[in-house]
Length: 182
Image 1 (tube, rainbow, N blue to C red):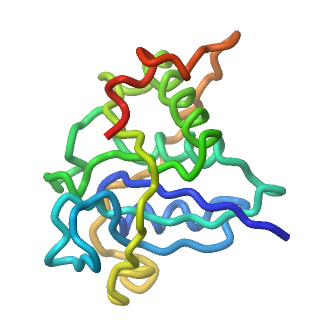
Image 2: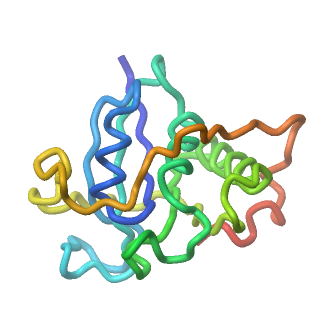
């Protein structure tokens, strides 16, 4: 069986991991840092990196689009460099794609979120090629599983359902993603 990987950032990685790990088809998750300047980042030293989650999933049980729809449900993709009480580039909304197909699906999903009106503003989620993913320290892995009353700003929103657009959208045109690539 071949698994696939998604790399997502949407604020503090504790809450993202806790909710995404429970999704059907998710095989494993780990939290870490990506998209920044330094090698071997740590919680105390990760300039430019986003707190992110690496999701390994079974494509026979779920797909990338379904994971992204859930991702957009559990965090606010319209706040730049902020989720809940957490402020700074570490807490930005970002999708780090591993191939052109993931990029296409990410841009298409963002367009659907923007068109849906489910969030009050325009999506500011960064869409960028995946670079090195640096696993976070052990104390951050599975944090809310070990500390169920720990801090989170991620929630499942009952009744939140992203409608799919009708027709084909050319998400490969430069204007479709000129402000998305980071």
